[in-house]
Length: 267
Image (cartoon, rainbow, N blue to C red; front, top):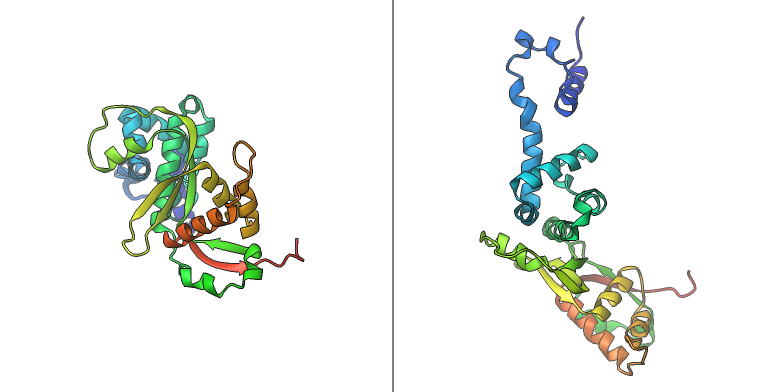
């Protein structure tokens, strides 16, 4: 009986993923040379994860990293045609899976490293020029909404993991483990359109809230209202100026790709 190419390919994949033997009778000499592939696939996946999460690898050490990644791959086998997306569930997995969930610094490190990777290879997009704002009528400013660059994102952290990651990136050896932060921190991550390097910067609490709101469709007026409400619930009379200053910073950093005027008659 002739076996189709599709059936052979399916059996080959099944062998790599589960170790099933249904492929062996289809191979010359019973597939005695096939064992070279048995470990190569999983080792390649581990290699990719070690490249994408090099600081996490250093933080855990070789043995624990391999243990964690094999468990992760068992729960999240590669489903995408591109191996680039192999680690897309790792942050969430580390945050809920024992024993790793008891060490929040691991999920924080994975989240930060994944954000760096996404910023690096996100699609390009034209950025908004500050001169464009001069064309907005004064009456339209309250209704402005913003579009953000695909390479821009924010990461919320509970641990001070960035100094550790920076040391690993320099190919140096960290001498101290990350420590928990006194207060949660939000970091902006983006790609510079000129140098194509990935940048990151810590945001203050007010700006982090404003950015999250803007990315969810808040208008400029909404941002002013948000910034006017400080931690002690007093009113900042310069909220509009503060919002305008932040907006200029966002444009200068190439985070914004465009603006539109919200139709207030629509929900």
